[in-house]
Amino acid sequence: MSVLILIPARMAATRLPGKPLADIKGAPMIVHVARRAAESGVGRVVVATDSREIAAAVAGAGHEFAMTRADHQTGSDRIFEALGQIDPDRRVATIVNVQGDIPTIDPAAIRASLAPLDDPAVDIATLGVEIRRDEEKTNPNVVKIVGTPTSAGRLRALYFTRATAPWGEGPLYHHVGLYAYRRAALERFVQLPPSPLEKREKLEQLRALEAGMRIDAALVDTVPLGVDTPEDLERAREML
Image (tube, rainbow, N blue to C red; front, side):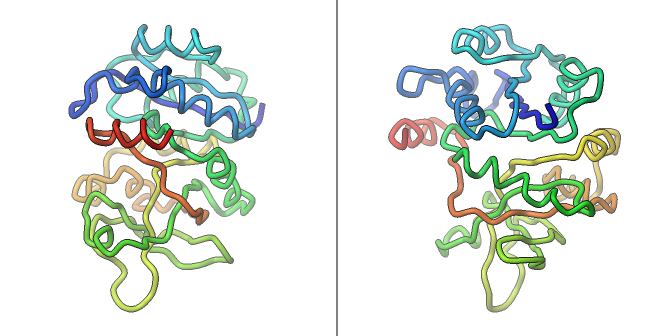
């Protein structure tokens, strides 16, 4: 049990309340995410939630859940609490945090997120996709990775931003917010206070960079649809 996939899920989304249980082709969205995670084949899958309704839906579909406190500020805090419940003997070495609102995630992308951890210097691994559409290059909701290539298909992240960056000729990369943590890195991360750039950009991953932690991104081909609005939900239903 060296790899554990944890999926944080809560009911209190502001733009689409109750979205983990939104129906997509006869199953709640959170169940679709759990299915994709299980199909990746990388490890045990557990949904971390503060909602009995989400827990019941997950269990009814044959997946595991862990009940967590309701007052967590971030998904990282939620999965850390769940990790302590699930693995008090510390057998898990790597934790993959898969967001509960990306029902179209490719299982191959989840597998790809682990590859940067082959380098012992990497603390946290994530995913990036080259931006092809011009309007996304200037969209602040499309988070960009500013990174330097370390090998074919991999970047070392130097910064994450909502701005259009870096300047000049060359590709821009969309950051996909899925993370694979070494256990020690997750433990350190959740103990850190929110950092100045994190608060300015509203990007939690900057906390790790500002603390000197190394994040590398594996480059994949597709961006999973994040469901934040009713329009996103309709798109997800069409895609699935």
